[in-house]
Length: 248
Image 1 (cartoon, rainbow, N blue to C red):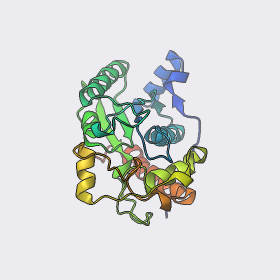
Image 2: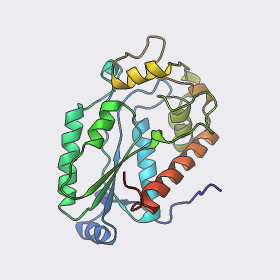
Image 3: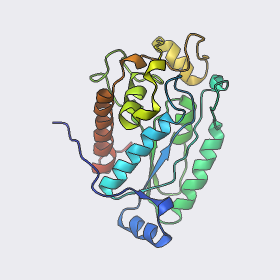
Image 4: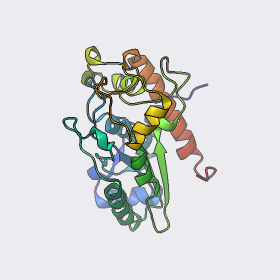
């Protein structure tokens, strides 16, 4: 049976809390959720902050359920270098994101945080590498890529998440439908090898694509609700309910 919990409280966003409130919350649970987003195109039909909104919503739900603090969102990630021509796109270099996270985690670790949970929904390989190589003194760091989860039983036209696709678009139709223009959605498929080279930054967004890769035309709010519930269930079970049993 699929578990579908609802938030049991309010998200604990440290930017909205006083220092004494943060200290008490960290003493009660010394974990900190850090949403790491991106500012990049997802096709003509989707907003630039798609990845950011997905992880912010997930962070809020997990914080509300488990009473764990959330840091301010890191709004920028490492984008594919070949996407620089898209209006509004903003990217950090891999070493910049890595150094920024090192500085932030070092500061929070000094105030008693013993575990950091980095949530991201951005699959560009250098972005993932920047997160995976963050260094702390003794605190544990867990990187959670929500698109590493298997969605094959939910998707219709793809075998895995792509970009501005059936998965991204369905999630936004569920989370923020007013920001999606389905009349502008355009399908554009890549082979597995082409997608791998694109995520490494070795392949430009093809001229035939408006910036999305996959089949956004198959997206729906109902599918987005199912995908989001699947993400939340997997993350809460693996990271929040049995953290000691997971040695990753």
